[in-house]
Image (cartoon, rainbow, N blue to C red; front, side, top):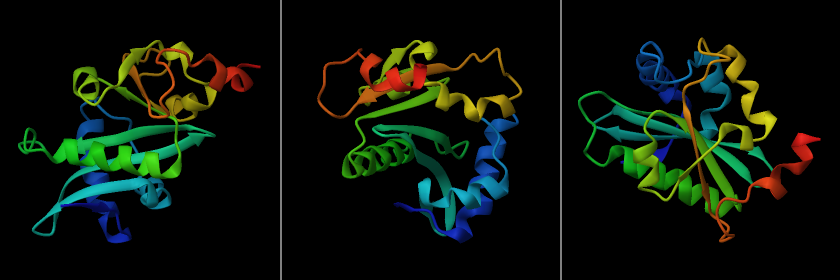
Length: 166
């Protein structure tokens, strides 16, 4: 079942994220960072085990990021990831977030939810704060995807990001 993460879930979230970070597929996160951002996380728990996690982190006025999205190896294709992304999207709508982005290697997966690929240069500079800790910085090979929830026409991010570019 999908639910908001609790403090006791932090070590399991850390293990999931670390598994994929060691393979270069996710940005590493310290256990301390996970505790600090535990309210951002959704988890899939089954029989007391955390099998998936995903965080919705607010970035700016109407912009949020889906990050630390991981499903336990061997459990993909069972709807765990879909349920986690759906939970983040619903929470974003409830908060009034207009746009959600993610940096990913699985763009096709995000496109199923309506995300579109955008050039990373279209994202505001605030997004890159965590990137300096990535071993791939500044040669990031992740793909930026974005979903507009506010009903505006797709593709025009300029207005939202003008203040950040000045």
